[in-house]
Length: 156
Image (cartoon, rainbow, N blue to C red):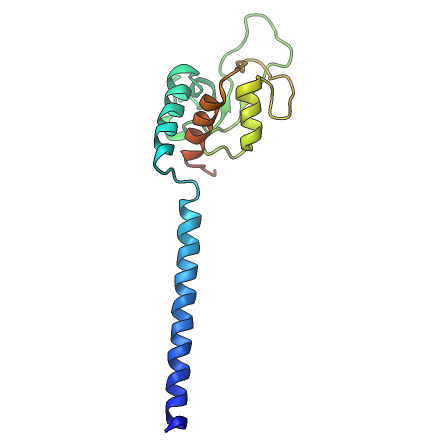
């Protein structure tokens, strides 16, 4: 009787191990999918960051491309753009383009904190005009970073 049950027992153990493996893979995929998704209090920080980005700093004015009529292209929200304004008189080191901010593909959190809190570039350099110099509180900088990271990164 032991010999006849052995293949059945092996199949049950193999199936159980297979199911455990599937569950572990599924949990890993869910964790990866939810890694950048906001939870609880993060929603308030994201809302605050959105307000600061869109209504106070008006980042979209330079970091979102414009259509042929000069309107912001909402389909490419904060994806970086050519600078559309020019100084009245030449300004040394004037930037030609802006980097993408949606999803923060080009910056680490530490680099963004440096830009927003210290008013310097990501590596500590002087910011190129027409970029504004900010000296934000840590909480406001964190809210902006949370909002920007919540936006999808689009690859072209």
